[in-house]
Each structure stands twice: as C-alpha cells, then as structure tokens.
Length: 277
Image (cartoon, rainbow, N blue to C red):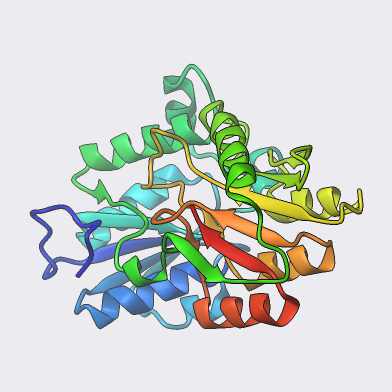
C-alpha cells in the first residue's frame, strides 16, 4: 500500500486523519480509502476545508489547541493509527489558539517551544493513549517529487549552483529556520524562508528582479515526517511565475506535489523548471 507504513500495519483498523488546510489531506484521504482503509476525520474550525468535512460521517471538529478533545476523538474512533496532513495558519500560534488543560500540560512539558518539540510531545501523548502517529507521506508515494528533471523550463540551473543552493538550504533547515531559500544564478541568496512561509518568501525574493532565480526546498538531516512534509503545488508554482522565480529544486522522495497534473501543467505553461534533488 505504501512504503511509509510500519511493518505491522493492520489495514483492517481505522485510521484517523487529522486535517489542516488545503488539498493535501483530501488527497491522502482518497488514497487511503482507495487502499481499502477506513478513514475517520478530525478537523479544525476555520482550517479544514468544508468539502473535506462533508465527505465524512465519522468526524469531529475541534478548535486549534484543544489537545484533550483530539485525544478523546481518537479514543472514540478506536483508531490505533493517525496521520497529520495540511497546514494550520501559523499566526494561530499567537492569536486564535484555544489551549485546553491537556494542551497547557503539553506546553509546560517542553523546554523549547517550536513546531518540532510541540508536535513531538503531542505524538508522545497520543502514543500513551494507544494511537501511533504515522509518517505523513503514507499512501501518497506516487505524489512525491522524483529525482531528476520533472519539467524542463526556459532556464536550467547549473549542477554547481544546485549543489551550492542545496547545501545552503540544508543548513537553514538543520538550524530550524525554514525549509527553503531563493538564490540567483550568481549564487547570491535573495531570500530565506522563515515563519512567513514559502509564498511570502517567493514574493520577497521576486521584488529584487533577478534575471534568473532558483527556489530550493529541502529537509533536515533528521526530518520528522510525521508532521513536517514539504509540499509543492499549483499555488506555489503560480507564485513563482508571478514573481519571476524561474526554477524550483525540490527534495526528491520527500516533497509532496499536490494536484500533481495541474501543478506540472502550470509549470510547463509558465516555462518553470522543476527538478528533484
């Protein structure tokens, strides 16, 4: 079914999909169901797409930060497995968060509060209640960016530039700053991704008007794919085109290409080069 499933995976048991924004959770739900897996949904108010919520009778909708209700839903679903897919609006970490008692306990249990430590603590809390958090690439093997050229656009970055950019991006990722950067053909770093996200970074990089610019998206050496899968889709491709970013080099086997056919068609239309590195 998927090379990212644990060896002892029992597909007769239900899978809880913890769904954020976008089409990523929709594609995962469809792929899991196509593999014969029973999927139950945990959505978030103001985040999960209404069209996804409508697909499920077995669903629970909670507010962002309600860890106790999330655990209760997993118990009610009798789900030994769960998967997280889709982003939650980043600003909710500062405004619009609704932490319950369980969430406050979780926050107090970690010394450094960032996405990795908080989601890691959440995964541990779920495991104590009998639910294993799975690699978020499960069932979507065919949607991962392959190694090599997916689309040959108007400009192809040199092998040397790709290596330099990959090393810089990996350094940024390993230091928990972000997963991407934009570099021009001369090796000048135009922008680095941080809390603002990929699209805002691309817009900022485009403001410099570089004649040839490369977007690189990579992963940490010790990436936790249970809650941190890089995603590339039509919105990002369009943002590249709108801001004069000419090529994208994406971590092969790690980056999920959502709405794959539409994304590739859009890249071809705009002459963008897409490479798996």
